Image (cartoon, rainbow, N blue to C red; front, side, top):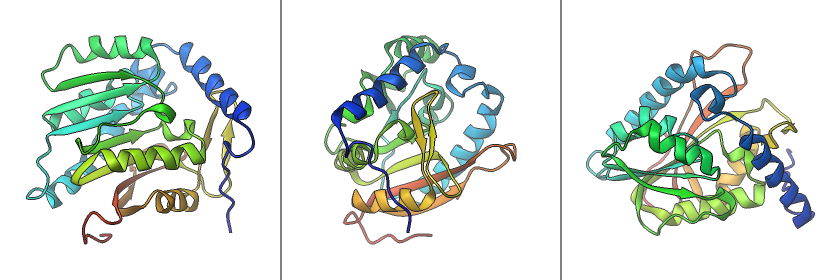
Length: 238
């Protein structure tokens, strides 16, 4: 049995350092695609193609049940995912990002796209989406910056922010076993089993999951999960 490490269980002081260290790390990062991807900007196109394929399958299955009106990009950085993926599928996309420098860069990067909605400068541990507002909430390469307890709380708030038949889509590195701690950027990489437990704790079902293809073999496995509230409908994994 794997142990789910709740970094927030021991002390609020430990939590504060965990978040402060991450904030300081990202404050020193350039607001570029390469900066957002840790020096792997060359993989952006491959990443987007994998995400687009996954999202299209979800939306095609829901074409008569979900209007695709509004999405939320969590940990949006400079808006890379919004620009290259989400605005192609949704009428409006809101962005939430804790670094104000990245938000300002996102406004320029997105160049006032008609599909861009609101910008929120806030860490996800403190952010609450508007109730019953989003068709899709997209979280990519950001949840490792939340403690387990805060992640569950955040997912519950996201669940409440979804419209009927809406989805939370998560795209994250997944470890092959033990939890991996990156002290440089103050993040953690969870195993698949830990994610499954946290999703369950948040009252979410996995509707679809997939692995990102065509990344270099030396990189960690990247998985996509489409989640819905356990009580939202009768859909099952497929």
